[in-house]
Image (cartoon, rainbow, N blue to C red; front, side, top):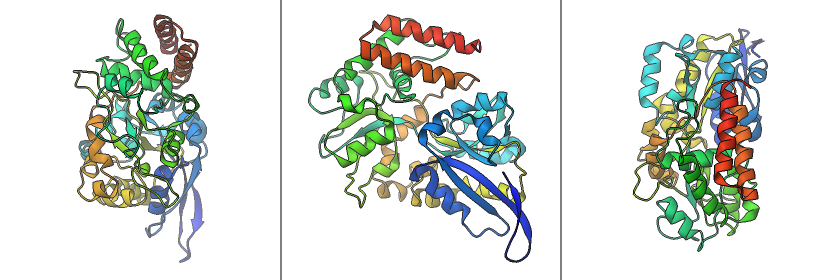
Length: 387
């Protein structure tokens, strides 16, 4: 947590501790921004693994850190445990309204809950299509029907590890027109089974070794070997859109699949926000730093230049940013503008973990899709009751 330190000029100031996730996209820009020469401001960023970012208790982290990078489904838990400061108590409502208008898709609104704003949209991401253009020429499949057909010709992967099995199923359901979690029911009647039909059809054609890999591991495999040609739905990482000095080949990212004749790019919003621990003593310098991270300068220049993935819509259409990153932003913007926001109630994270296990088990055992959906509905109902 924050502590008093003495600067070289003899002045005393607050030193802040912050936590983000262990990946260049999650760390490099924040670390570099903290080292900018802002008088009287000291901020140190620590890192945690991706799995911790997805599952670690926010309350535990807020007991140790002033600033927390978090995913929006954790907001309900954080509010229940009373461990975050509302951002609208740190930054005035007019400024927040401007940030909201500038944010791509629902990346700002996803951190709104129970009538207040709980984090600033630091990083925007959603599930998109990924392919090796040298292995799979052209523009890639546009629909799930195309994915199923092309999986006979090109080696395909599905992102199923951790929470991603249920998130993939959710995305297919959204492409089919589902409004998830309405009236105490997870899926509209029969639509969950239809989504499982599509997921299972692709699953049977996937490379078995890829089924246990998280998104970063799948992208690493795609970039460093010729074992996988495409993944129809995976969280986009701009860092893989250009080749690296370590023999890593570029991956082309494009919009998520829709269904044949459909208009919705089914995808579940990801990305990260930056929240302030309730134990944090907010100084004018900290407030200025948070606002700078949301500024046009930071979002369209500084963050992209330091391996980050900005949340401002302007950066996603910027004529300088896009060529530098292989067109990643322009080629996936339609998807992120349509991306679905997950529930944020306390208990959702536990449900998401169990639901992913239910989906994987259903695929692995070739269980009836009706049985898998019934198990998901029952788990969802229990989570809403706090069981």
